[in-house]
Amino acid sequence: MKFNQFVIIGLGRFGSSLGRELINLGYEVLGVDRDEEKVQELSNILTHAVVADATEEEVLRSVGARNFDCGVVAIGDDIQASILATILLKELGVKKVVAKAVSDLHGRVLERMGVDRIIYPERDMGVRVAHQLVSPNLLDYIELSKNYTIAELAVPNCWSGKSLEDVNPRGRFGCSIVAINKPKGMIIAPMAEDVLAQDDVMVVIGTNDQIEQFQQSIT
Ligand code: ATP
Ligand code: ATP
Ligand code: CA
Image (tube, rainbow, N blue to C red; front, side):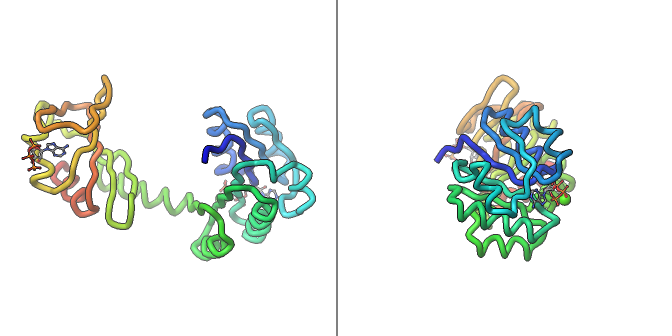
């Protein structure tokens, strides 16, 4: 299902960054925060921004929260407010409810409430940055499941001019290159004779172990 209208509860660093980006992407965003200053800051950027306490049912009703496809509860530190705002959005019938959790326990509570997606921004960013710091060639990655990953790896200088057959990732590590992102464009499903160059990025799929070994052969 494609969502067009978002309501964001809490316009701290996470909520405001999310709201700005959704606007940049061309979507409608209603922002709600009890802090007037936060609302002022975003009033010219978001479609609508209102000063309100999102733990009051009447308030959420009056801003028409139920008409939104997706609600994001971006309150963190005040766990009680996060939980109350979340249950209210769900009860109002918002189709998809996403919430930010500041701790594991907070996340477990949200999970039991049937929240569609729980985000742990600080925890997840810490994990991501750790991976990138220990492997300089790793630009980004997606965990497909517990064991499988897609990684974006920068091509090391010593591989410039080599073909996939020369580098032999499938033979040596068992992982496949699903795409090569070149400054001129993408090669999707590259073949053995496709050649790597210095500014290229390889998109690699495999088990975590395979990707890890492939990465280590680069660094
Ligand atoms: P971030 O980590 O995203 O920067 P923060 O640490 O600044 O957030 P949080 O406590 O996570 O602050 O709250 C985010 C925002 O949610 C704040 O701007 C706060 O005013 C707002 N907020 C908290 N409780 C409510 C509430 N009951 N109704 C509306 N807004 C709320
Ligand atoms: P294989 O038996 O390993 O599947 P193959 O004998 O069918 O390969 P090619 O498809 O020509 O031969 O590829 C030769 C080698 O080039 C492969 O063993 C593999 O290491 C590498 N290779 C080719 N395409 C890719 C790719 N998309 N991702 C990773 N490695 C590739
Ligand atoms: Ca915070």
